[in-house]
Length: 167
Image (tube, rainbow, N blue to C red; front, top):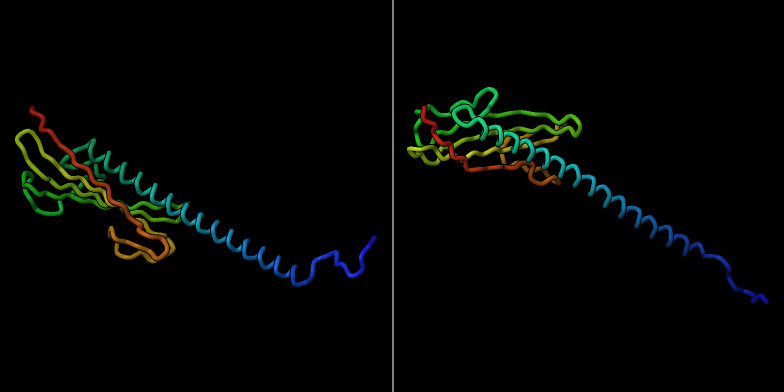
């Protein structure tokens, strides 16, 4: 038997509350998805920057002084004799990632740490800075930070011993 006055459906208030909760959940999921996509782009830029730095470091270590495998060869930034203790060499390389719209700058530096009769000990450093192409880039330095993106640079450094070869 049927009871009189019993409701079978949902009231308008219950439907409005359910739709509101569904809307909040959908907005939350979309916000999380957007953050994950931004994080993925940032991670890919860091990976590309690290690969560029490692490639330049490997090229320099294979070639050794005085040119360090630069194209053109690395030029001396100071007028120091070849056998000075703190000779520094540097070069800048520019690359553009068309797919993600990111520009990359590389800076290579080689500093002689110690000179011995059998060879030289060098500190090799590669700095890579990247910046979106559609945004006005600041002065390129290793402290570039963009709001919401974090640090947009990395530095890779290694010690390198160059043994003298007797003719």
